[in-house]
Length: 638
Ligand code: ADP
Ligand code: MG
Image (cartoon, rainbow, N blue to C red; front, side, top):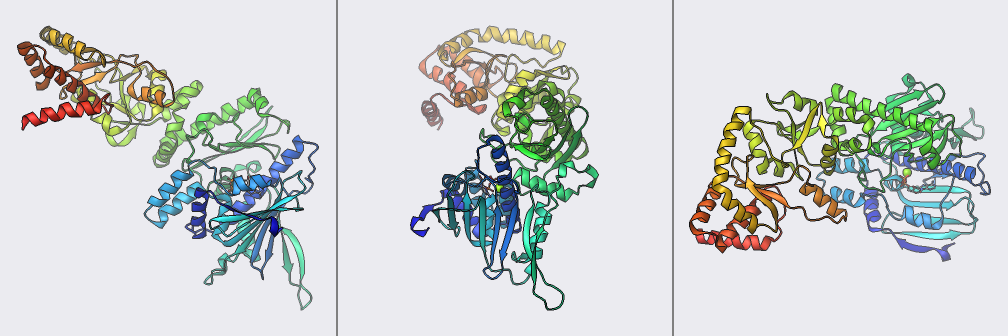
């Protein structure tokens, strides 16, 4: 075989992750075994399924199992399965590279992590699967044969930059992973992975629920000095957790199961165990993770719920059972009355499955709602991790809109540190306030300093500060909460006054309109390429100017988002509002009336417009021109 061996390099990210494993930044090394068994179990499920779908597949599925083999003298540990196996190309692509999106981001965060604890946490959230073997082994070998193929593949690596790969004329069905273990810790024998009881303990703790037998051949020393004999024992109980009565399952058991289905190394935030009876029986065991995966917003991200039929694994990522906005929910649904051959397409159409999905969604949302009322800390974790995804539900899932609006939290001017819910906002509304006001933008700080907020601040009105891209869309579509309109502070005319104040203000504005009419018309002409109108503002108290949209205009953030998505959009011209109470605006009018409109005055108008854009965090069309005019002006003041 060696003359056919090839040496290949790991992909750069894989190499870096492996280095972290070789130097073991993760302290609980025992989990390597859970990862290998988890992969073996997946491979057995896949083979059973493949055989079911393809009657011609030459594979033996009578006794699907995992075996653990130990050689104490050679210090090797082998995890073997007779499952689906891998082709050579699969070995190269899934073992030699890390396709998981977010890997680059994780590595960046790891480089920046200050201490070992933070690094552990990050790796723990990421989960490294197969590579965990390198925490305990200084060399790993893998022999595999894909079901249906005659030859196999041998792979070996010591976790440095390269691995070798070679073709084998023959190999047993499935995959065997052999670890050449590092020397055992001398102080404690706890981590001697060649010791029978260590292996028994680890399997019991982490892999008891695995649906296939995990076997090991052990020595039984006979009483007196007779020959030692061997026997093969099954280490796991194989009980499907979801089929057991709720009260009988320990939290730790739920958690280990979650780590297998969720491919996570951290405990889940919430566990939901439910059962549907009647015409369509099913059991569901769902988990809300305690942190978002790095690929939550990537379309290739791995998602959620597995479908079983009567304990038999049918498919991963069963999107018919969980809507996209709850894609982070992990777990298993075991439906008793489905065909083992059911396809994704048929599932999507199935009336019963749709009913199950409705119940699951309601249950997940109810769980979050309970967290919100009963366990604010946990709710906060939930919302920080998944809030941005859950908000997509306000668009996708109109049936559950009310409860989604109840569990929603957003930033607000009310409290710089805490989020608020909509009910809280409504409870704090001022006398005479009829609408719910919100502002959108990329960062809280820019919105808070934007001129649009001035009149609201002066009035003591609370404003919701929305910074997720999806926010702009849902506020538009939802439109109102509790009978109150959701209104953008940057759109349309604002009118925050009482009846009498309004009359007075109107009279004052009428007077100012007369005074400013000529200036406004002139400025409208000067800035015609950029804005569609220049008018006096009733929303500004301290800034000279701001740019606003009509009630139906796209906001700048949305415009940016659509353009980033590659959509062609006509340029949206907005409205420049100027503040007659500001000395710059008053001075501009005076200069205009005295000297008429020269070039320098036109530049002042441009500067005024430019600063209004900058104040809302917007982009200037021609920043260098703006900078030059400004520098000239400043020079003249010295
Ligand atoms: P994950 O299990 O999350 O996909 P792993 O790093 O644990 O990530 O495994 C990577 C991939 O390697 C698996 O998705 C699978 O395709 C393949 N693999 C690992 N172990 C086995 C095995 N025992 N049999 C077949 N394929 C395997
Ligand atoms: Mg795995």
